[in-house]
Image (cartoon, rainbow, N blue to C red; front, side):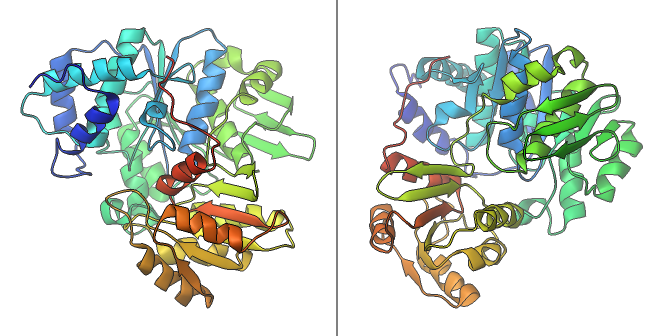
Length: 429
């Protein structure tokens, strides 16, 4: 069927119907279509996997690699505001026209091969990169690693940020099992950085079994921080007088340190210079990561959608030593651990409002509200719409208070839109 003249919005609706499953792990379909396209891939490809911190790590890697003068393409998911964010060239979202052209190529090549929304987008990103002549690609692994669509292309090196419980219905219900899935991005003879001091045994065992290099936080590189800044020590490079990165939160130092270790291991030592790193790490800005916004109220927006991310968010809230009222608006997808997300935050929140996220896999607001009430012994207002949730939050607060928005990308993005902080664009790259 000829889809000439279709808008990006039309295409995205069509993508949702190309496969009967929103999630269908496996590489066979993706490999078939990539072979049909006969794509010329970037000469350097980095995979970024992990439970949390992937988007931040991709942003840090892109910013630093661009300092070399290379054309750097990034692929991330999900998006917060619009699909174009997923495919960027030198930090600029790809234009509607370039994404549509890539979609048309992928659709023509796939024939009768069914692709999920994520698989289609992943292959399209590679087509955009080829058309633009990208030198280096930094690809975020969407789920797990071993069977994720991104893993269909061979990496130069990889980064696993950390491993904790998330997507348990798909990846396993314990950290070691999930870690083994994420270890699927490893390759014999290439290096993978594991950026958390807590290293699952299955990560180390997999690396040893296949002959992959493994660079470990705390063993092969270290970092220290102070109120003035931070320092980093790798295998052959040492950086002092580093300024804190642009992305908020002490945990971002771990993400930044892992990226430095990745680039050192991949032979980009010329970029490991204090002035270059300070310049690069001052650039990234990601919506919905401990993002503070002041309009008629003080808002804090964070996409924390699993227990580990919620614990980090709770620590950040506690560090604020905030004395006034905190109201939380929360939404989640139906495969999320509600108790694991709500419990860490319960001591920091005075009033709760639940709403249904704008996604087919969204957990109903009434069910979220029921669980929140049981977990916190506090009433939870169940909003019938996002507009009602925002209005109720405003009624409960003054400018002295704060409103937390959390639990899902599919909540934070629409709230940012509703607040007028961002408006849809058409992409630039």
